[in-house]
Image (cartoon, rainbow, N blue to C red; front, side):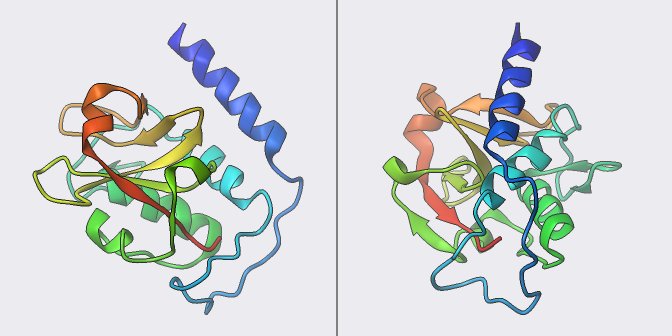
Length: 163
């Protein structure tokens, strides 16, 4: 049943994706207004979905060794754009544009306070209140629901990166 839901989400995101991708400048800034290429957020989310099931590893930055929350985002973003991102959730929370929860789109970054510290966890918004993340030791990259009480109480906000 869970795999069916993931498959449906992948189909939904792929239906929204554009067939091609505009190249973006490797020197484009990561602050200020983030004019996303149409469909780029969906493509970012779709690429990240390919890593569901990869084991969590603290400090992990690749599918071979495993991912932590920021390593997953950094890896997918760098593969897609050729640009590097900060190595932790707090650093990621300082770039891109702040997005109101009501305006979330697939590919936006969502942040949570999981270590009694703001912006200590990050995931990729997929749509329908769901996000992809590498949660903690002993787990794997997975999809969670932002309406779940645990995540809802720890939500810190969202950012949109230039893609």
